[in-house]
Image (cartoon, rainbow, N blue to C red; front, side, top):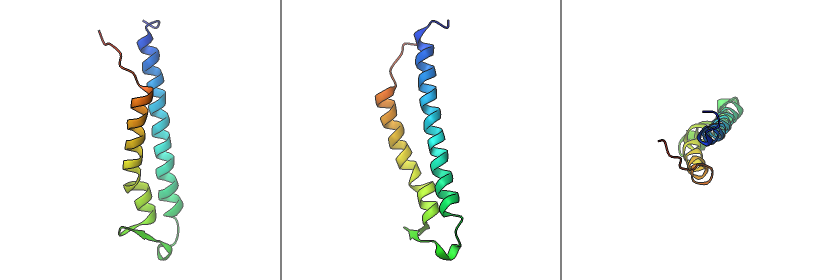
Length: 82
């Protein structure tokens, strides 16, 4: 079973997705705790949200959805399951 090329493809795709997940966590942590650790009187607001919340929670969803779409189209391939 370990010689089946589908396992190698699945492993490569899992590593790619794990790297994307780690990138998302780093993005979220950097903006949420980086910008959010300031004094609340120093916050700037984007669309009514504090900048740290906008970048970490609102902007991250479309950015990482687009990255996921691109990664799936470029790196993933169809494999037969039979």
